Length: 267
Length: 302
Image (cartoon, rainbow over all chains, first blue to last red; front, side, top):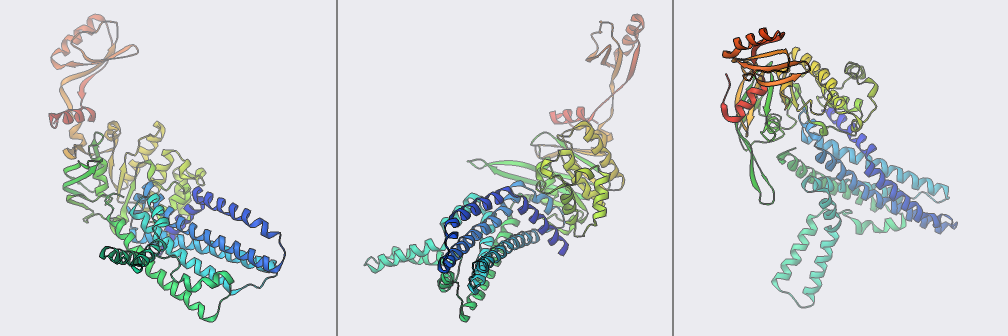
C-alpha cells in the first residue's frame, strides 16, 4: 500500500510540475503581484516597509488560496477527462487510495508554496530590518489550513460536476453569500415583514450557510492578526480549531468524492 | 478464466435520453491460455464488453467473472492482469521511463531501476526514456503498456484495438511481442477490426453483433476449406474464361476462383493456350469471409 501511495504521489507531482495551465496561472499572478508591489519597494520608512511587507504577504497568501483550489480541481478534472484512470483502476490500486494520493499531493504542493511565501516574507523582514513577527507564521499556517479545506472542497465539486461549474459554484455560492442573504432576510423581518415564507427563507439561508464550507472558519477571531501580524498567547488555539474544522471538512469531502468516483458508471 | 453470462448494458443518450443497448445478453467464456479475439463491427459492443471484464463499466444485468471474481475498480484480482487501452488513455504528462515505472509500481511492488532499464532496452525504448508520452508515437506508447506485462509476467492481458494507427513495421514487432507473451503462458483477450491480424494471432474468436455473441469458436473451425471452389493463379494472355469468378489481375498473372465442376474445363483451357498455372488449390475461407457470412445472417459457416 505504501508503494502504491508513493507511486501515485510521484506521478501527481510530475503532473503538477508539467501542467502548463497551473504554471501560466502562477506566472500571471506573480507578475501582477510583482508589478503592484513595485512602487512601495522604493519607500524607505519603517512603517511603509511594514505596510509593504504586509501587503505583499497578504496578496501572496490570497494567491495561495486560489492556487490551492486549482491544485484540487486540475488533478481530478485532468485525470477524469483524459480517462487515464483506466490505467490505474485496472491494477490493484483502489479508487480510495488514488483519491488519497491526489489529495496528499495537492496538500504537499500547497505546503511547499506556503513555506516559500513564509520564508520570503521572513527574508524581506530581515532585509528591511523589521522584526520577524510571529504573525507571519500564524497567517501562513492559517492559510495552509484553509488551503487544505479548499483543495478537498474543489476535489469534491470537480468529481461531481464539470470543472467550470465547480469553479463557478465555489466562487459565487460561498458561505459569505448565504450569510449576506440571511442577514438581508433578518433585516426585512425586523422591519415588519414577518411572513412565514420569509422566515422559512431566512432559516434556509442559515442552514445553507452552515452547510457550505468556509475558507476561514474562525476568520472574525483571527482578523486582527492578519492586519497587525501580532499574535497573543490565546490566539494560537484558533489554529487548532481551524485545523479540527478542516480535518472534518476534508474527511466529509473525501468520503463524498470517493462515493461519487465509485458510483461513476464509466471511468 | 473469464465468464460472461447474459450481460446487458444500456445507456441513455441525447436530449431525449434515448436508450441505446450496448450489450444485449452477451455470453462468452475465455479459457486459460487462450488468445481470444472479440470481433465485430463498429458499435457492436466489443469495447463495452471489455470494459465490463475490467470492472470499468457496471452491467445493468447479467454476471461477469474474471479469475473467479466479479471485477471491480482496483480490485486485488488485477494483480495478474494488464490492460492496454486505446491511445489517449495513458498519463501523457509522464515520460516513457516514469510511465513504465508508474504502471509497474501500481502492482504494489517497488521496481528496481535496473529492471526498468532492461525492459526499456528490450523494447527498444531506452533512447526515448526521457520523452514525454504526449510526444511519443502510438507504437511507443503501446510498448510502454507492454512493458508492465514483461516486468510482472501478467496472467491475463486485455488489448483494446492494439494495432490501430501503427505502421506495418510496428505492427509486426507488436505481433511478435504478443506471441512471446502468449507463449509464456499468458491469456490474451483482444478486440480488433483487423481480421487478418486476428487470423495470425488468435486461437479462439467471438463474433459480436448488436451486443450479442453470434459465434464463439476455435479460429481453425472458422478458417475451413471451401470444397465447392478452387483458387487458381495462372499466366494471363488476355482471355479469361467466363466461369472464373473473383478475378484479380496481378501484373502478368490472373488470380481467380473456379467452381469445382469447371476445374477440368479450366485445365483444358490452360493446356490448349499453353499457359503456366502457378497455383491451384481448394479455396480457403478467411476469417473475413466467415465474418461477413455470419454478420449478414447466414449463421456459422461450418
